[in-house]
Image (cartoon, rainbow, N blue to C red; front, side, top):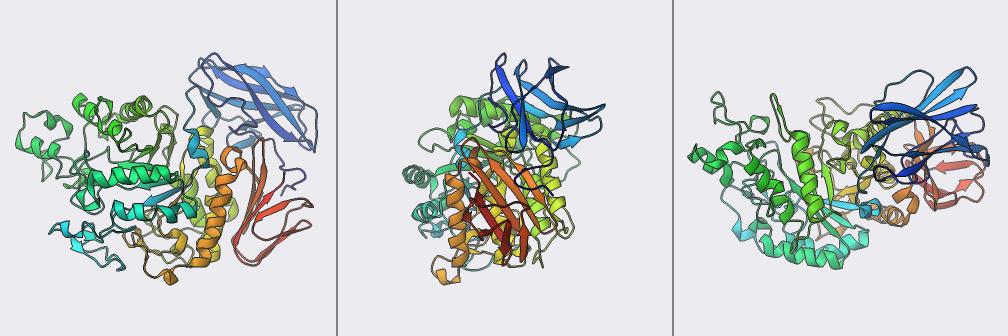
Length: 603
């Protein structure tokens, strides 16, 4: 593999500030594009190939003076379209290479993995250094104020009881978590280093999952109602913690007034909000065929108005005072507006984005795309996605070990596959190559979520491998999100089993050593300019360890992730490198006593 005195074997470009002078230009603005190449990779001539009005154009590039074993090539070009794709042509004698988002190629390639520039307003800048914390409201913390309101259809559980799951109580187990409980734990979250909370739905519903909303207008009284959310919003702001909601644009719940009115009166305006089919037992289409989750039909302009486009729409309401949410996560975003021969997805997505830009241009919009669906990350709608395919799944495959997981690999009815470091890096690079850089760094990074097994179970309860995963989570491009309880070693073999409470009464049950290490990693993430604004260069990829560089104009970090006990030879004397976290460097070697992560400042 490549040495670190010569950071990589091949030319490199990404969308970060070292290579793109302005990642959010206006149409007609001139920007500078650069790539770098090691001197060992001989280039006689370099050209930028860029699309202007759908036509490929070529612009010669200039080589700067070589230093530190590498050269920079640059060119100034006018951006003529809202979305511009480009790649670089590198001439070497009578042969050539293409440099695109997937790397260097000695053969002709299509434009599918070209780099992309979006002539649109920048994505929210605050998310670049943010660390989020995902809270499933019924399971995080309780004030016990609202337990007397429990409906007869819910099954009460003791706070430290494990969810039963996979029986008739699934979705109706009530532990009594509430927003006043969350507010009481803000000091804990601030000490952890959290700057944002992503809540799964907080609307009234017929389940404690709350993805079957019976109203989008109020907070569930079981959580403390609107009053508790307003109080939480105020306290969170004082603590420097932003709040983000979760909205089901694909469906509502069977208890929602819209479907009730539609069923009662066939002439009602709400009738047009749904898809009707006499061959279905309950008469309407539901998500995955479920009567409890009526699918929404966005051919209704009235529905569009109520949900996002109207002055008092649901999307806008929660972004405004007194709630002042800082963003939306959209449930099953890639399914919204898609039904048989109808596909209104882009209309709905762009409508939601427009509504958010009108209300709070600094709010973050992220979609749940459980499968790889990069076409909708073109910058016109979602800022980013929950990065399962380009992050979580590859890491599961690489770090899994004696996995204690049931009901398959997330998204597949199979056990977790076994990946080598090369498989993991290739999967991640493949995902990145298909989307704009700004969509990558605006996507949510996660090791697990309320829909998956806990990562502690994926790694066979090995805290060292868990730290290795946390190391990637907190150093990779994107917005890291920690599922509540992961930082103290909460377990769970599948989605419902993973929705466990945190034992606040007996912290001796926590993995406190692990918590201390997570705090250190979060602190590095929050303070590092390279981790918030830097690019990504893979420099060593082996079966049992990987290394990459995150570099910005202000800082350069080397990250080494090991999945086992081993000595790693970096191939270069690293004298002068400062260890920010992990084992020390001796000459060119790092001794990992277990799996783990090392973070080293190179300048």
